[in-house]
Image (cartoon, rainbow, N blue to C red; front, side):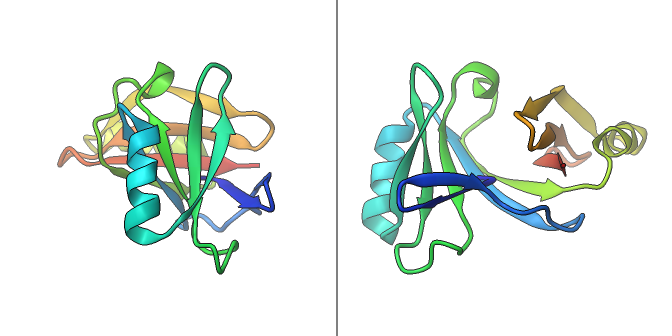
Length: 139
């Protein structure tokens, strides 16, 4: 996810250059069980991220908390329509312009753009081949 978990403190990453892969998310019906699976198989450290009535999970290597972070998320709320797969999140300079280009080039905008507090805007797209990608305009 767009987050880092260090010593039980969750922080957002610094702004990245457009085109940079920020992180990967896995959205599944039971994020608790799947995060336990990856914790055991890979050895990732697991930190809960409270979303109110449930928690998603930030997964990182124990030895390098600055290494790439992944999120394992419940398929609930705005994520309910996302099929189980690893989803890359990529930085863009201008989300609105990227969404317009997506549609002009035969892709689809999947839902409305959403705001992550004061950290930026994001939106899921589908390319003409059917693959999904989350675009992020960081602030």
